[in-house]
Length: 364
Image 1 (cartoon, rainbow, N blue to C red):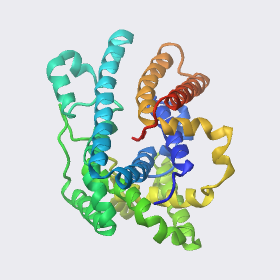
Image 2 (tube, rainbow, N blue to C red; image 1 turned 180 degrees about the horizontal axis):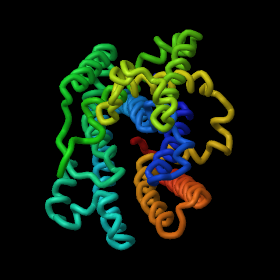
Image 3 (tube, rainbow, N blue to C red; image 1 turned 90 degrees about the vertical axis):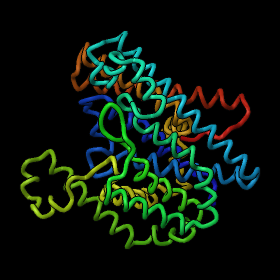
Image 4 (tube, rainbow, N blue to C red; image 1 turned 45 degrees about the vertical axis):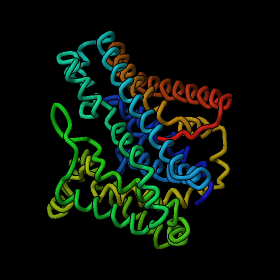
């Protein structure tokens, strides 16, 4: 397996910044993120990078300490994410109650205020999730099952990838998912998103050695760029009536709806095309990755779980500030920039504190 790539933490940190920005409703700064320029967004980045980094980190644990140590590490991390999810749920309820009860419906915590016992019980079994916390239960499951999955991946990487692809295909056909509460299914369907996590793990085990020449080849770059341009044209048609008229009806019938919950194949292909282009434009030893400009992103990526949870709370506070004081363009830029700065400072402090303690694996 390859050594730790600083691009992974940088990409994950930038993704966390984008997530914070996108979690603020109506934020003009969301035009700086991936969400408006193609089928995929930062969720795909998170899932792929998590599969890759978890495979690398837990793979080292497996080789140095064995199976039971790997199981202990993965279960402990699953418990940490589970605990963070429950605490974040509690903090969101308290924040809405004290800051502005009118936000209860938008934050999806009104049901907790109405039926606290049942809602918290459902949250404990991962059926109820407040706004912007949907990804955490999916990661709880992924880490809980990561050790046996890793053993299969290390022993039979291609067969494991094929089995994962088969499950993904069955989900696209039959719509399998876990039930949510009080309505709907899990927003990030684990049966579907596991495929992208597996792709990341497979790349770490054997894919980088087998496919790296193709990923860096001119045909791969040209095909990826063409797909990204086509995706951009389609997404721009969603907000521009003139462009929408140009999109043929048969194409609309073919590609719509582009479902995020089940990781629509068009979203998956868009992310893979984006990954190919990024891999070629930002090589592993690119000096910019170690510059002060991206150091904050790297620090956020190193502390992804904590930064994600704090970002959810900050985005709620930012929305309240904009709604109460001003929602003008300048105010949105200032609030977004301040939030990113606070996340970066917090991540830097976490990294500093971690350096004073015993080293440990930090994954999401």
